[in-house]
Length: 154
Image (tube, rainbow, N blue to C red):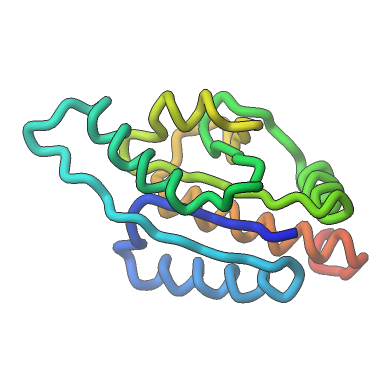
């Protein structure tokens, strides 16, 4: 079992980038974790759908062949922390790879969301992709502590 987090762009805020890397490092103690950042498409003079399509292709290239794709987007399935931990643990028990995809400023392309096995909501609000990434990796870390019965999750 392997977890892949593929995201469009890098954190522009240094403190936010540091927090993301901290939780990615923590999460990797519990789950085999690969993180991939793909280039953000310049939106100047290009239709939004074309931007999302190009970014979606870059994200798709980072998904391992046998991985189940999870599109992180508003309107997706909402899981509490315990349910998310159970989802990850089930994938581990079934030796199934999961690839979580986070789009850029305009979100994910329709081809990415249609091709995903699951759509996951990280919050009922629209989040900047950097914040969405932080929320996701913190929850991956939290899921590891829940599975092991550690006190982080109260």
